[in-house]
Length: 314
Image 1 (cartoon, rainbow, N blue to C red):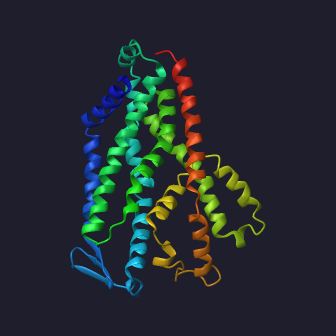
Image 2: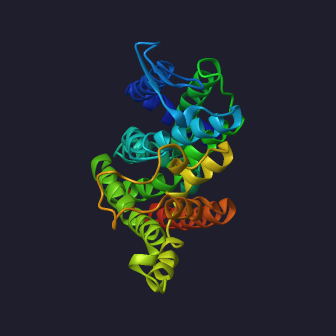
């Protein structure tokens, strides 16, 4: 009950600072933008018929159309809630939860209660997870209903995005909690978390680059193996979008928009077959290994944070 009270306190704090409602408005705006678009067997209809874009790629059966729409949605979400934009908004919203809890006077009062420091910390940590769970639920359900009623596409696998968004957020919030305990500053915690995100993002993007261009860059795959080992040591944020695509049963983006760029020189242009092969290898993610190893890293990070929190005087 005490932990639940801390979770409620974190949630009330977010509502008092209007953060919760700002995030809700962002979700409604995105769902509204999606509602202005529809797909049929001829192409794309924008703003309820104001603009129409016909494409031969959309002249297909229901299952292929379903997979292609899923690919586009996942690709967009990879840049929104599963990518930089949504996660940065979420981190900004929650970065001050633990530093505010550790303010002098407030933390003294809480620590005077008969409750372990571990329980206190986990209450605040879980409060941020509940905050993100509610935000993800609103966003995913709204967009799910838009795709169903407006586009005529019901994708049950799309609902897996709710836990996946929270999972992605938890990978990053582990750093935010650590830096919040260390610095007791929301700004410092946010900036250091973004820096940590770049650090864990680098080996993942490097691995994707080596997989895509392994024949030209690293024919012996020596660097690819080294980078892959490093990639497995950090939370695999890049895998979340691939896992989401597999659960939604989405097509590859190279099947929808094509991999080659007309502006590139012929010798630099990747063949469609090579691009699809590279994308399939990257999308062939073992969700159990990816999520399990990432959660192991997160648990170790939380262990370090709890050790610091237990020993620090406030």
